[in-house]
Image 1 (cartoon, rainbow, N blue to C red):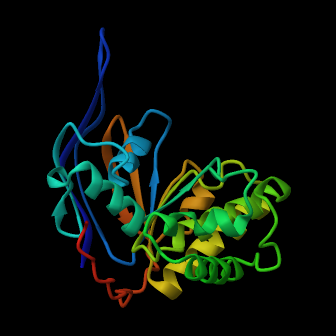
Image 2: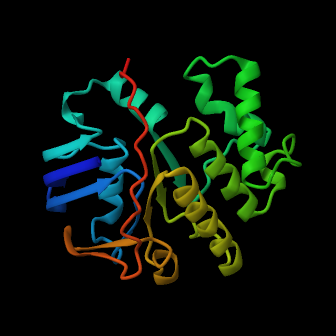
Length: 245
């Protein structure tokens, strides 16, 4: 089933002197449970495309439907709820609160969902144990290595049980060994939990973890291919989409 549907998508950034056409009429569909790498050189439009997919920015024209709903029809509050409830974000810079325990960092998204404190801590603890940090709950993020901080960011992205994880250069600040550990974690979450993972990267060894590679250049998709060894039977069941408040 289709999670993301994009049709004739354009994104233009305008300044007083010039219009930058970052995305030029892109068409794309991503299903529940896929593992996709979006590649391309700097300035190719891949990060702009991801920002639109994450509802962090809106397209200039065209259609972006998430779980069958045209995002143009959603108001600001509905878009915020969609980001909080249905999309998990992992960034290159981790974006953790440095003086806050990692337990509270991971629990933070549930605060906006008005989940009780006890339940927030229970679910955050379980997710940190899942990513191998169950013995560091009361540590602040500043006392962790880069790889550990990125694991916290992954736990935070997953704690609301979204069907989609968007990861923008998630290994960009990590050494090779730690990068592979993080990508192994994404692969496990995709294969075990059926989470759709979309990773923006310029590194071929990172993209090799994905089952599908989409390549951008000059704002266009120039290649969209499945790996030759993708199992045909991979079709995880979608999670039910709740009504947006």
